[in-house]
Image (cartoon, rainbow, N blue to C red; front, top):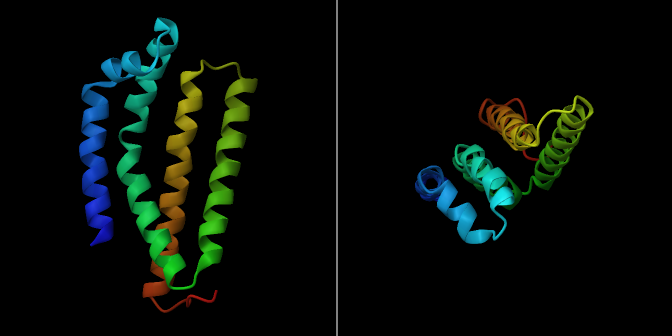
Length: 130
């Protein structure tokens, strides 16, 4: 129930981010150049918000059941993905907008890890202590 509520609420927020990204960026920032760069970030962030909600709900439930190791491993993996991908984009001298995609890549990896962990637990291939 928590996952459904959090995914639903962040989906609504995602729609607002897409619809009002320029307005939101200009409201938060005084510098027009920075606001122009930030507005696309909100549009990149929007589709990731429901993934963030689902990942946080599931990892929170796993932590509540005693599986604290998975949350740590998925967070460290996400940080490593962002740093490696970001480093490659900087090394290749891609525009700053490419750095925003590292967030999307991070949550795709986390979605895979969460799906895999849930499959392990529901198929009986693993228990919480693994």
